[in-house]
Length: 410
Image 1 (cartoon, rainbow, N blue to C red):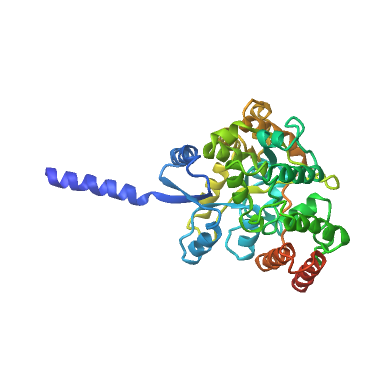
Image 2 (image 1 turned 45 degrees about the vertical axis):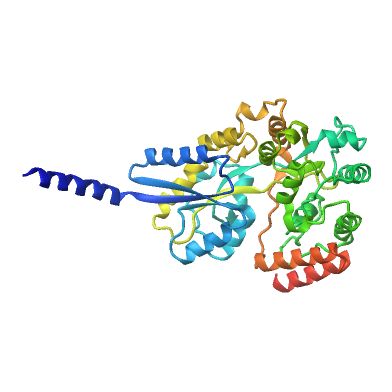
């Protein structure tokens, strides 16, 4: 055999080997560029453990992930695994965009029961739980001092937080806080206050009682009197984080992972930052803690391999490693959560956030609800709450109208 034939045969062999590689994409939400190294490490590690695979990581903005996923599923080119929040998962399941997973009992036991139940619909599991973090309050000690508040005594209830926010605005002209009431955020605040959303059998919406109306009215009054920023309803936590990083917001209600963004955006503000527990509502004593998971989209070429990747990304070892890289998120697996790392405090805001959040885990619960036509009903909720905030409807009329529309659908 001559030299040319040997070289050609070798090249064909290489080409054939490359062609046999299975490419797997996994999508995450807004983790770049902070966590590039960890995501790339995961890709390389899975490839090593699964010869013949090539793993590609794609990071997608939170605002684009749902549309991008639905388009990919419709085109028949979905990623193998996609990172979704619990509320996104509800919508994707209802739209038939996800595959049910075939987890064994042993695999299910890796995760805490509550996080696993968040991704379970009609007794079918649609995602492996990943990370979560009970909310905390990052606060600017300098603004506290200027407002005549003691930085060593941050508010510990939502009621005292509102009082502090008013004092801050009156004394400094700066906003005290930006409540999480945009979108369907108020549904979580109702539940944190111990107020139900649906009847016990989930057949009726019940959030137009006097107590529900009173809670919404509290925020309507704050908005009307300019105690909360004008773009609260439009920009949510993104706007709050930007305002806080600019030194124009005294208290930031946030997952501790977003404190790192403050550190990157404005070191001076980060240095002035301390962290306090999320102020509980006295009536509820629960903290809505949204959960992230890994799901397998409808139409993947190799469902078993995709599920293997989802389990790999969310196993004990990798959840603990991710928590150590983020410094502020917590695993949803039983073994990893017991690691001593989570009990170590520190002087900076990031370390404080992790320690404070770890103490709140007993109150943490993903309060995301599953109900038919979620996208449509959520829009009705959002539009009517905004109408109340803008004075176009009374708080009672807004909630009555939402409940009527919901019950027609439920």
